[in-house]
Length: 128
Image (tube, rainbow, N blue to C red; front, side, top):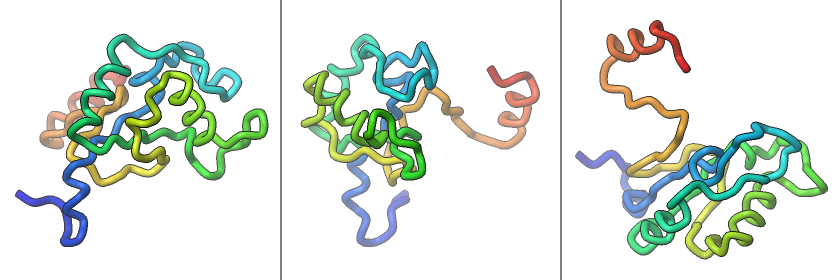
């Protein structure tokens, strides 16, 4: 099944990866708004490997245009600096706050929806 509209066939090669809690630890939450965390085990190696075959897009609320500046920098600039510091930015095609077209989304806060009965049961059992 082709889920991409005509003219967007290249998006079939996208993998979208959340930033906080997936690439780096997010153990202080928002904290001071900076990108403070250490890389999660194997995250950088996985991104390097995936980037050889796929276009890697980082999606994060930090990149929202209405997010306040932190130390005079946008969230996108802070994420880019963190990626540069980890020597991984060359593997990243884009940083966005929007959900991009992709064949896969890697996110620590995701839920794999298959049908609404199971989804509602899961929600009613207590989201944690």
